[in-house]
Image 1: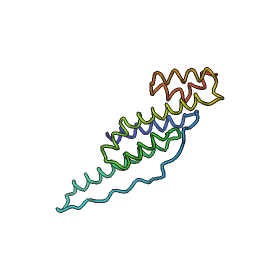
Image 2: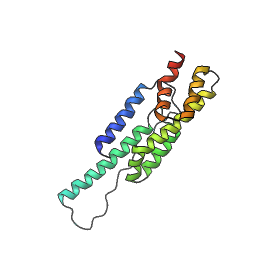
Image 3: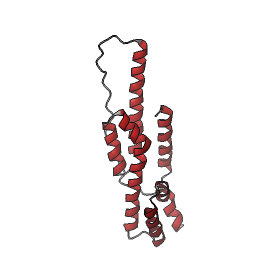
Image 4: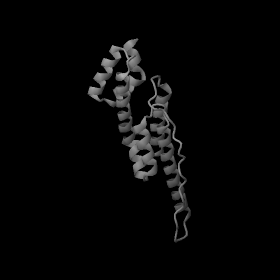
Length: 158
């Protein structure tokens, strides 16, 4: 995953976070600061290009860490996103990339299912919103669940 792709993914997620008007699901922030990488032992002198490559690798890892921390810090990031994100931060570079490419969306979909179930169970939830949320849980469309939690639940009653 390139820096541009990571930046684009984080920008989209952060922009979505700024437009969220629905209730946050177990909102929290990531308190763990990313660990700084330690230089590896080198048996031969490094060339200038090797040093530049090492710096690029460190920058790429740091970019991945920043992207993950930003995602798990979003106001609607639930327990699944935070758990999977923290596991990715503790994992390998490949695990961090996998979380950013697919793991985040899967974890967010699970958190959204929980948010819908909570919305359904609240006594003050209007019957129209409850029926729409139940229907969404049956279809399990992640994009529709997210849209409903952000704005759709208010459109049903409005």
